[in-house]
Length: 187
Image 1 (cartoon, rainbow, N blue to C red):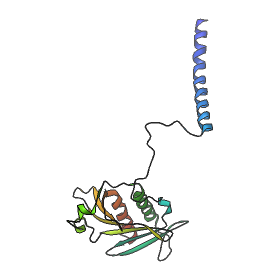
Image 2 (image 1 turned 90 degrees about the vertical axis):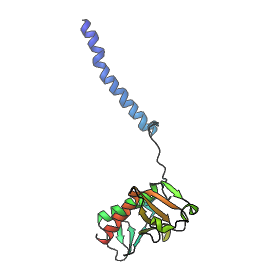
Image 3 (image 1 turned 120 degrees about the vertical axis):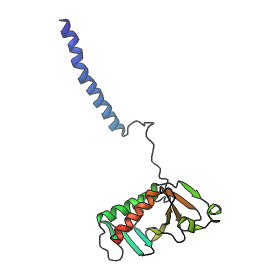
């Protein structure tokens, strides 16, 4: 008889805990949010382009070898010249490149007084290796000129059209634009 008395509370413990967990989940759903956890950091875009990537509806890329333009249509990216859909890999590269401009903060910003004594050529920006110009409803949102990587190959020099600063950006930003260029040129 002692075993039955002890066994019964243990058998009821698991369903009671499950019922409490379900109740907590229901309360969280009704309230509409989970408790804030100190481990989570709220995202705040810190890139050089404050506009949302979804607002960009035209991209032009230029190199010494030529110029390529793309427009965002309701069904995806298309070539601006012929209106044909671009390959999915290129569309993905364009989207990622634009997102990086929105979320990737410069590692360092050099003001004109710092870079002008040596000139932009030292950074591969006179002339730039390639440019990416982003548009929203026919207006230029951002024109980025990309130069050479730094000696360690982990950062890259970039200048924004109309601004005097030279930005030192994480190399992956420029690499994504380079992949988009290769996709555009078929290379």
